[in-house]
Amino acid sequence: MPENKRDYYEVLGVSKGASEDEIKKAYRKTAKKYHPDLNPGNAEAEAKFKECNEAYEVLSDPQKKARYDQFGFAGVDPNYGAGQGGGFGGGYGFEGDIDLGDIFSSFFGGGGGFGGFGGRNPNAPTRGRDLTSSVSLTFEEAAKGCKKTVEVMRVMDCSDCGGTGAAKGTSPTTCPDCGGRGIVNTQQRTPFGVMSTQKTCARCGGKGKIITSPCQKCNGKGKVRTRKKVEINIPAGIDDGQVVNVRGYGNTGTNGGPSGDLKVVVSIKKHPYFKRDGYDVWFDQHISIVQATLGTTVSVPTLDGNLELNIPAGTQPGEVFTLKGNKGIQRLNSISKGDEHVRVIVDIPKKVTDEQKELLKEFEKDYIPPKNAGKKGFFDKFK
Image (cartoon, rainbow, N blue to C red; front, side, top):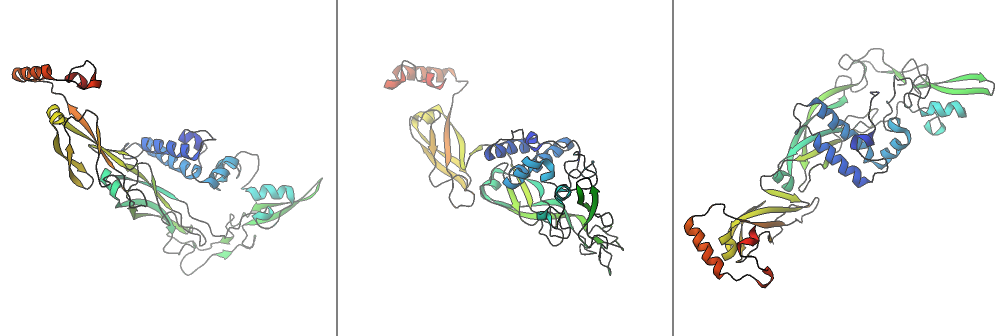
C-alpha cells in the first residue's frame, strides 16, 4: 500500500460529514472528469479514475464508511500498513505484523478468535475483492438498454493446483508451529505479572499451512491474474455516471469464499440534438417566421422514429409542445417512460431581398399587436 495514499474524502472533494447524495454527486463529477474515454493515453487521469472508484466504493457503503471513519485505511484494507513499521496504520510503534487481535491481547491476556481479542482464522472463507471497469454508451443505448462486453483482469484460482498453491499430486500441510491457526501465543513476565500476546506465525507467515512443493504456474500463491471478457446487461434508462454491478465477476474468494463483484461505471456520449433531463428528452425544433405565423406541420425525431407535430398559427418563440405517448426515456426497472418536449426556435433571417423588405414593411403597417404586446412592432418580439 503506497505511503502517499490520499484520503478518500479528499479524492472526491467532499467533507467528512457529506451526505450520501453529496458523495454520489461528487463521485459522478470526478469520475467523468478523469474517465479514460475522455483522457485517452493519459496515465495520470487513469490513475485518478481508479482512485476515485476506490474512494466511492468505500464511502458509498455505510459499513465500510463507518470503519474507514474510525480506523482509516486499516479499517477497510487488512493489508494496509504491511511493511511500513506496523500492521495497524503503519505508524503506531508496534513491532511485527500485528493486527487488532495483537493489540487487544497484549492488554487483556489473549484468547481464542477475534471476538476474544485473538487473531483472525487464516483458513476462514474470505470474499474476493471487487473490480471496477467502465463502458461508453450512445444516447440511444442508454435510453433503451443494450449488451456490452468489457475486459477485466481477474485474480482467479490457479487451474493447475485448484487454488491450493501446491504442485499436482501434493497438498499443503498444517503448520506444526501454530497448528493451522496462523498465530502463536507468547508469554512474558512483567512487573504487572505474566502478559500473553499473539504473534503471526513466522514459519507459515500467518497462513496456517505450509507448501513444500509449490505449484510452478502460480509459484505457490494459488491465484493467477487472467484477462477475461465479461458480457454485461445495461438496463434501459441508465444515466451518466451510474454503476452497473455484476455479481460474482470480481476476484475469486479464498478458502471457498465468494467472488467479489464487477462494478462498471457508465459514460454516455452527447447526442447531436437530443438533451436529457432525468427521464425526459428535449428537442429544439427550428421554424421560420412565416411558419410560426401561419402554422405548419413538422416531422420531429423521437427515440422511436419520426413523428408528425402540428404547430398552430401564432406560435411564439420558446413555446414548448409535449409529444403524446410517453416518447421519453424508459425509467430504470420500470415499463413507464418520460416525455419528449419540443421547444420551438423561430429563426430570424439575416438577409432579405429588397422586395421582401417592402413586403415586410407593408405587413408591419397593417399589423395590430396583441393587447399585452405593448408598443413594440411585430418583429421586435423576436429580437
